[in-house]
Length: 197
Image (cartoon, one colour):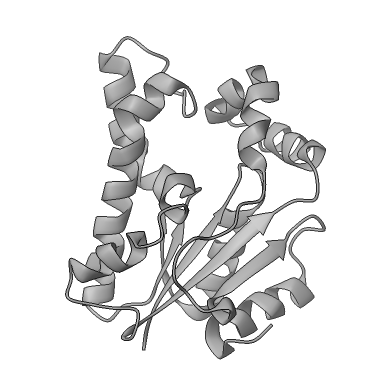
């Protein structure tokens, strides 16, 4: 069965590192919302006279956010329709709060939860300080708004509950506070491919 696996969570949690590591081992396509949206976001923000590196302000969310998710899901669904397994990376905050969102997305390619194995890995860290330290460590200009507005931004890092109508065995809340090692990679692999943790 085709696999559509979402790696979601807050900035700095390590969702991209986890997804890319497992995808490389398994030869799976990865679609990172940040990567797919970046050229369009830079163009739109620049045209609006705004900071092209901003990825978190209300102006960015108005101009770019929904476009990024649409681009990402269109690419994911095209691969799923072609029987290619896909790992999708992004926060997906609004989407994971909408119970029928994933079913509606799959329906656009004539698919359902019965013929696509949808799984969600919620990557989180045990506290905000870990998020902050990892964001600083990666040194990306795209994170400056987050750091400059940390007290407000850090509220978005709270661990969320998935509202999609998936069985519990299709959702993994993954504490990545220790970072990636062989044991945690094995847990991810078992969850994605065997349905167990």
